[in-house]
Image (cartoon, rainbow, N blue to C red; front, side, top):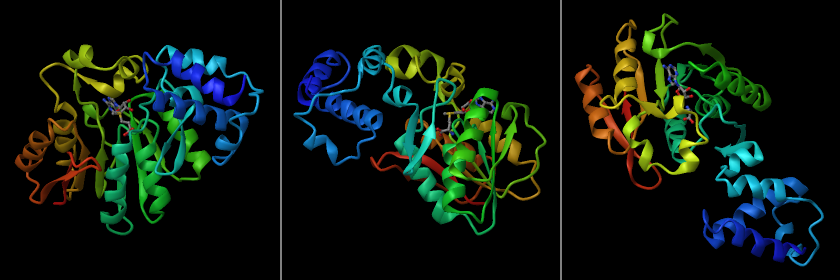
Length: 273
Ligand SMILES: C[S@@+](CC[C@H](N)C(=O)[O-])C[C@H]1O[C@@H](n2cnc3c(N)ncnc32)[C@H](O)[C@@H]1O
């Protein structure tokens, strides 16, 4: 089958999940990756026979498997992060948080990323700001092993900590605490798209009903035990951002702001002191 024909076949087979344009782009990504062709080859190979069998990838995609799990990696801040079902697929909006951190953290600060998952925040930050001393914590051993592998593949020196932040662990003090914690109430599960609920780990997403700010509250309380109030930086559900701001303000931070992501939706809470 020619590449042009294969594209129509994929569009047809994926129409229950993706529009024509998305299905075409997904095939392009898979084809480029599996054939090692660069991004310029796609147009010139349209009338060439496809010599590689991409049906295993198509079968996975038809079942709703995210493209990142099909390929085994996700792009984040122009870096490749290994991902699997034990870590949240890094989201593009989280890149805005990292960009903010890169320009705003003072030189030589110590930073901890709580709930590091694939390690995307901690690793991208360390790569752009080698002066920082970066630690990354997660309660999931499986997630940490992916994060460790990503740090080693990308050459980022990070201290990884296996711990449950809800137990207020004694792991030292940090100048900056960043977190994109779980914040989706269990009851919201039924309204979510299948490829999030089925393929992202539960541990990364959900908090008990009635307690969407659980992690923000516990992290803020945990840092109150530090000798100096750290810079606190959170990613939030857009519906919770004002409540998280209020929570952080009532916990004693003075300079508390919200920040919009690239889609102009306020999603981040930044507190300096
Ligand atoms: C929303 S994901 C964020 C992953 C990554 N930082 C990112 O932005 O893509 C939340 C992470 O928190 C971790 N987590 C859940 N409960 C935790 C706990 N009690 N203590 C520490 N980490 C926890 C999950 O394993 C998951 O990796």
